[in-house]
Image (cartoon, rainbow, N blue to C red):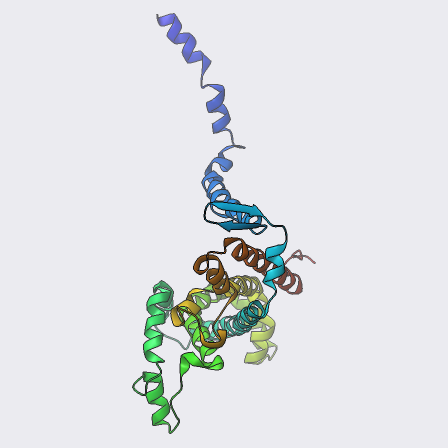
Length: 309
């Protein structure tokens, strides 16, 4: 009996345990939950969506129809939705990149006190639900004279505005809601990047007689480039995927499609009208648009260049 136990002890761990405990395998074990969830929740739905875009999907009936769904995509309504989305992306990306940089530099300066309190409060709007925030905005920017925004306009001697029924004011509402929610988050990104700027560079620039703007342009901005590329890329992707900001203001559809976005058009066709194949085709086109624009933006900003080039 003792002999068999001694033999088992000499055998050591099984080959499977040796394989799982090896240094080459352990990293893959730790990342496997993410890889599996990514394959199930992202890759598989994307493949199914591409397949569905070539089909006519009706309750209990699925037929292959080739490129018919794609032939239907390019219509005036889609162009209107794409135009609205593009304007929204340009405005939000510009505001959510330039303004956070300026505010982050101000908050990082020696003149601002209670920095910890400011940084903690900046993240609060992002924690709020888009639906809840949108309802508050709808009350503030209502069509009646008693709405907060119209009261301010009347106090300034201006007439009330039908905020949700004009193209410019509808776009203003969507952009304002997005900026209110994500401005603080982007400020925190840039604040974190500013901590990596060596003080010696500012001191050397000051000795050379550089002005505040010159120090910002030649010292601060180069260190903010990686974060800027990240913020711009994420803002572009999220902008083209925008749906909630539009839906919260116009649930049943906006007049003249002034608030219709590409994702809203997908929801309208795929969910409300139960035309899943057509909705999938719009989604594939949107995915290609996001990929191409993001790739061009990364190339133009030099994101693929090596650090020593």
